[in-house]
Length: 216
Ligand code: AP5
Ligand code: MG
Image 1 (cartoon, rainbow, N blue to C red):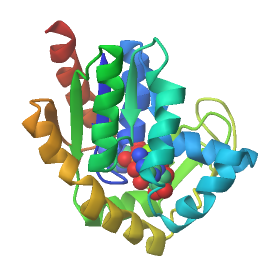
Image 2 (cartoon, rainbow, N blue to C red):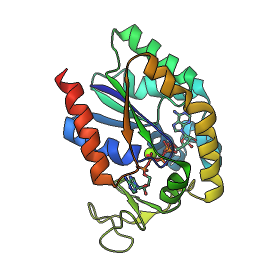
Image 3 (spheres, helix red, strand yellow):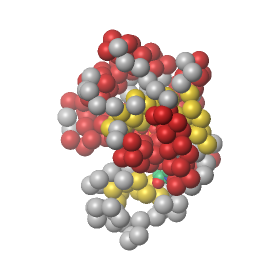
């Protein structure tokens, strides 16, 4: 399966994509993770994207689509694209990359969540510095303070988690990303998932959708 996970920041795309990738044997490809890793390494790509990440603004389409083509679409394995496409232009770029390869998307899962809840989730998020698993101070707390349940790594706060930057990310989402909902609806690929429930319930909903698509 080739999938897109769409939805506002904080909807739980990363949390759900990690679980679904493991369950269905897919690669979890997050443009946010790719950019953050590049920024941490100080590579040429990292230098180009760092200011956008810190401000909560979208990285330019041309650069983002080039990275996705090189690092994800041109490889042979199936994948979940988490956080790409994020603009109509990126949606068209992805269609064109797939068309050139004689491939197609199987579905775009749209995780719906209101802004108030998104802000609560994002301002409380903790991330493992070693394996990247997400926690939340209140909703998904680790068993031991500041320590990852899965690998024992330390937990940190993402640099774009301040309320001011979160508001900017939500504004970018509503202005530039939301039109993709209609874009995928018109292609008959949209699958809506109510993301307001707890993580296990959203995982159950995601698995039900993916099991149906896999069986088609
Ligand atoms: P990216 O890393 O993709 O950030 P985002 O889309 O803003 O999404 P988040 O990762 O913040 O949220 P999520 O939906 O993955 O939720 P999560 O599972 O973490 O992008 C970062 C930046 O990179 C962008 O601002 C931009 O600069 C750049 N970028 C990336 N892709 C780009 C592109 N295509 N084009 C241009 N620029 C791009 O969960 C959030 C929190 O909630 C966690 O604490 C989690 O534990 C908790 N949680 C999750 N699910 C639940 C639940 N069901 N109930 C309660 N809590 C929950
Ligand atoms: Mg994410």
